[in-house]
Image 1: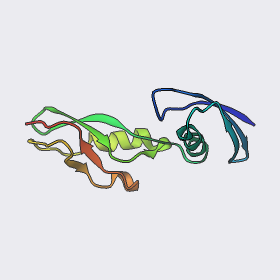
Image 2: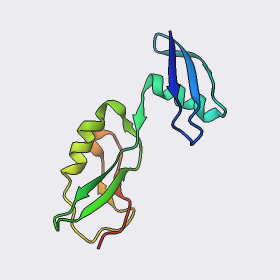
Image 3: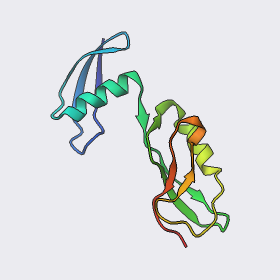
Image 4: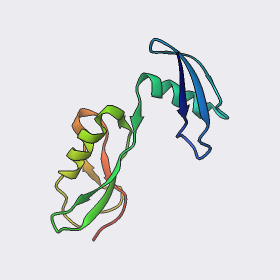
Length: 116
């Protein structure tokens, strides 16, 4: 089977052609760097994404946050809901951990901006 993917690891956005047999990648073409091949393998076997969103502090101010590590793609909506329900009190410093282990994924959620 052939899968067409657009690599999201750098601004080049290479159009990848991935030959797949079962859940195994046989070959990758169209990539201009090694990151494209790595992306194709991970996207076929266990796709992940970094989630960026906001949490409303108890003071009513939005706090921008993101997952420090990518999470499984099939958990994005569940994780986003869990992030949105996190309790945050101001002040918050950039890099501060908001959620330690997001739904057992091992990913931390950190503030991306200082909010006083």
